[in-house]
Length: 256
Ligand code: PGA
Image 1 (spheres, helix red, strand yellow):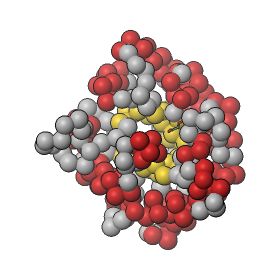
Image 2 (cartoon, rainbow, N blue to C red; image 1 turned 135 degrees about the horizontal axis):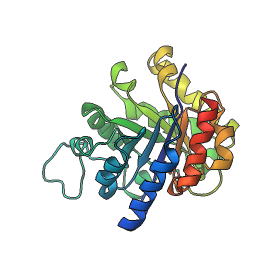
Image 3 (cartoon, rainbow, N blue to C red; image 1 turned 90 degrees about the horizontal axis):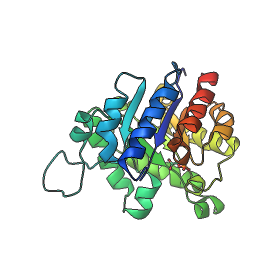
């Protein structure tokens, strides 16, 4: 045990302009300054990474990217590589977010390749898994998540997997205001941890951070973060307001 609760803000395709980006970063720097225990990260669009690492450089707030490509360099117009993210000052990279799977053709295979590239260059992948509403209603959510986790980690050794963060994000809870209940989330987090224990060791499973994502807000964060297998939150919409995001970090700080 002894896992810390990581609170990461995924900005997605926001804010649309440079002034708003600068303002949000400045506000976050100020609002997050009092928190000393909880690991924190902001995950802005690629174009804001340098600004984010610059503004947040002497703070406890790490910076992450929302995606990467598995090749280091070459003729791949429009792509961003792990060495580029590393040299931009990133610590984390989100991989396999459901919006990438849904709109941009991401598969368990591309997720696997991206995780390997991130690890090779010392980035911490935040690997997203989660079922759709119809999969939950059909009762196959555990099979779906088992497949996503197993395929993502295929062939990876214990030393690699130890450096991965997993985010359970039920697709039906993302951006919908419909959060998984703490009980539903805990059940799936427990399932993922047991799966990791089966695939690797109990010791490894105990050490892996498993974040919850999907409509996490200031008013539901504490009840989710109190669950024994929920090791933090991947926050979308609510991470675009510095006050709201700080409230979520405060909830984690009080539990830690
Ligand atoms: P949400 O997004 O908090 O806006 O639901 C979560 C995510 O997609 O990571």
